[in-house]
Every structure is written in C-alpha cells, then in structure tokens.
Length: 87
Image: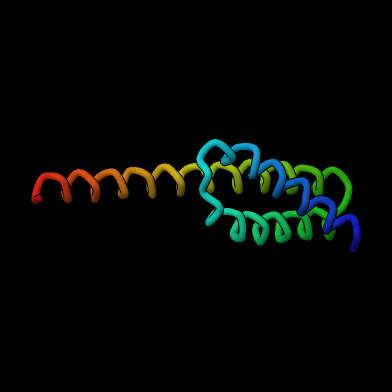
C-alpha cells in the first residue's frame, strides 16, 4: 500500500509540473484521484502489465488535465471578450 501512495504522489508531482505555469489548482484534486486509481491498478496487475498500466495512466491523466485547462482558458477568454463587446 505505501508503494501505491508513493506512485500517486509521483503522478501528482508530474501533473503539477505540467500545469505549474498555468496557476490553476482546481486540477490538483482530480489529478490526485486519477493518479491514485492508475497507481492502484498498476500495483494490482503487477509486473510488466502493471508498469504499462501505470505509464498509460500517467499519460492519460496528464493529457486530460492539459486539455481541461485549455478548454477552461478558452471559455474564460470568450466570456471576457463577450463582456467587453457588450459593455
């Protein structure tokens, strides 16, 4: 079980490194949850399959976090522009 927590912390750190310049902490909690899920799945599978599951989970978690952040920024920018246009 401690290994799962360590793997989850590593994935959370990776997620934070990718999103650090964005300064959006609302991705941290979903990142921790997905990290813990993928780390648990990798631990339960074990061996090469577990390592592959962990690697794919890390990549998917990071990709979804970045896509989510980009969509939020685009929505915020569109909202800001529409506010300027109507004021």
